[in-house]
Structures are given as C-alpha cells and as structure tokens.
Length: 136
Figure 1 (cartoon, rainbow, N blue to C red):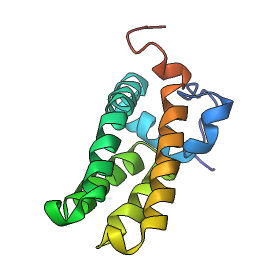
Figure 2 (figure 1 turned 180 degrees about the vertical axis):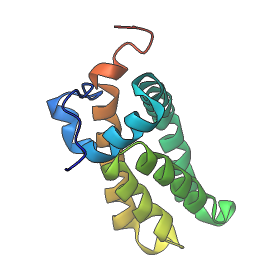
Figure 3 (figure 1 turned 30 degrees about the vertical axis):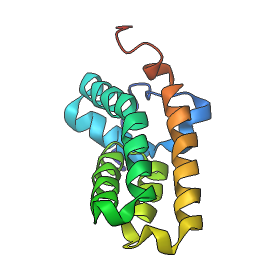
C-alpha cells in the first residue's frame, strides 16, 4: 500500500504555479499541520519574500560591509522554502548561501536572484495569495 489518500485537499496553487511546489512535500506538511496552517504559513512567507529578497540583494551588493550576512539570510530562507515544499526557491537560495564570496561569482548570483524574482512573482499570483483574508 502506498499510503496515498484519495480524499485529498486541493493544493494551494494553480497549474501555472505547480512547478514551484513539490506536491509530495506539500501533502506531507498539510497532513501534519493541517491545510489552514499550511496556507497561513505559505501566505506569511510569500508576503515577506519581496522585502527579504530586497534585503538579500542589498547584502549581496555590499558583501564586504556585511560579512556572512548574505549567506545567513539565504540559508534561513532556503530552510523555510524547503519546509513549505518550494524547491525552486530553495535551490536559488542554496546557490546564494553556498557562495562564501558573492563577488567571486556575480553571474551565479545574478541568475539566482533573477530566478527568485520570477518565482516570487508566481507565488504572489497563486490563488491562495490573491486575497489572504478571504476564507473560502
């Protein structure tokens, strides 16, 4: 027996955003903490992402004045993204977190930041994010 439940809750995203989510992880998290809690945490994370990314970009642009702060911020965001089943974001954050000297590989940083911006845009357009106060 595979343990799959045929009475599944709908996932908190539409077809266009499906590539952002790891369905298996999302279902496991929802089973553990519940759909409402998952959606609330996803909403809070998603709403905070644009500001967090702005902060991360500022830290990456001035790494000498911030020490390992870019890596710490990226590592924290990577962990949150992984826990919420967002592997695309986690991968981009991992790229940034793994670079001890962001200035040594500006192309990798630029690509990771551009991918994060695109992914965040998709997340912000998810059906569950369009009106966080709407209890359907």
